[in-house]
Length: 366
Ligand code: UD1
Ligand code: UDP
Image (cartoon, rainbow, N blue to C red; front, side, top):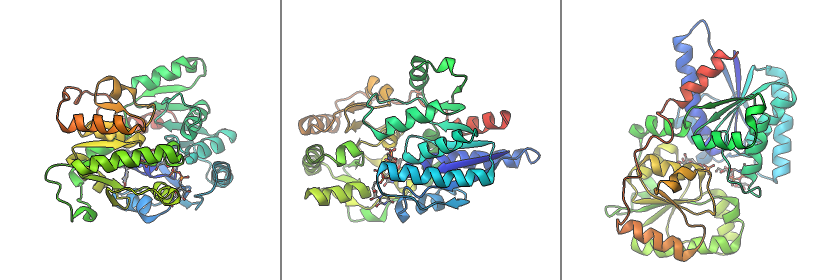
C-alpha cells in the first residue's frame, strides 16, 4: 500500500514524525504487508530551524518531493501547492493522502487528492475555534469535509463533527487521541538544553512563551498589548521566547520592543526541555498550549478562543486574549502558586498510541 504524506509547516513535522515511526514499526512487524510512505514537503516553512532540524532530530524520512513553495499570500501559496501536489499525485497514484492539522499545506494536499478521487486521511480532525476569520478554521473545515477518514484527538472534536452532520456524510470518524501526545511521551527522554539559554539563571523558574498567530502578529494593537504584558512579567520571572519568523518581522515593522529573553526558533528536543522545566506557558500556539498540559504546566492562552476547550474547562489553561491586565494578573496568580494542580494528569489526549491507531486503520482499509 502506498501513502503519500503532505506536510509543510513546523507542527506538521512533529505530528508526522510519530506516524512515520509507527509506519516503520508496522513494516518491520509485517514484512508481507508493508506501507510505502512518500513524504511531500510543500516548503511552507523553510528556514533550517523551522524545517530541517525536525527531520534530523526526529528521524523523519527524507521527503521524496520538496516543492519549495513558502511565503506569499494565502491564495498564491495554497494555489501553487495545489498545482504541484497534483502533479506528484498523478505520478505516484497513492492509495491514501495523509494530511495534518490546519495549515495551507493541509488544505492544498487534501484538495489536490480529493479532486483526483484519492482518499484523504486527516489527522487532528474535528477541531473548531468557531472563528471563521482564522485561516486555520477555513482550512480545517474544508479539509474535514473532503476527507474519507478523520482522526479526532478528543471527544470534543467528534462532537463538533456530529453537530455539523458528519454522521450522514459516509466519512469514517475515529477517535484515536493526539499524535502530539505520542510525540511528547516519546521524545521527552531525548530532551536537549538549548545553548541559547546558557547565559540565563533559571533556578527560580521561567515563563516559556511563543507567539505567531496571524490575528495577534498582524494587528499592531494586539501585538503591542502582548509585548507590554510579557515585558512586565519578565521583570518578575524571566520570559523565554523562541521567536517565530513571522513575529520577528512584525515586531520590526511595528517598531515594538520585546524586552524578554528572545532566542531563535529551536528544535523539538530543545522545546521539550523548556516545557518540562518552565514555571508556566504563555502562548497563542495550538500545539504549545496542549504541550503545557502534557508537562503539567498552566498555560495563558493569548487568544480570544481555543480549539482545546477541555483544558479551559478543567482549569489548566486560561483564555486571556491580549489584555495586558488579564495576562499579567493571571500570570502572577500562577507564580504565587494559588491554583490547584488537580487539573493535570487526566487522560484527555489518549494513551500515546494515536499514531499506531492511524496506521492500523490505513492498513485495514486498503
Ligand atoms: C503557519 C500556519 C499556522 C501554523 C503555523 C505554525 C497557515 C495559514 N498558517 O503560520 O496555522 O500555526 O504555520 O508555525 O498555514 N517564514 C520565514 N521562514 C520560515 C517560515 C516562515 O521567514 O521558515 C516567514 C515568511 O515570511 C512567511 C511568514 O513567516 O511569509 C509566515 O509564514 P506562513 O507559513 O505563511 O504562516 P505562519 O504564521 O508560519
Ligand atoms: N516548537 C518548536 N520550536 C519552537 C517553537 C515551537 O519545536 O521554537 C514546537 C512546539 O513544541 C509544538 C509545535 O512546534 O510542538 C507547535 O508549532 P507552532 O506553535 O508553530 O504551530 P501551531 O501548533 O500553533 O499550529
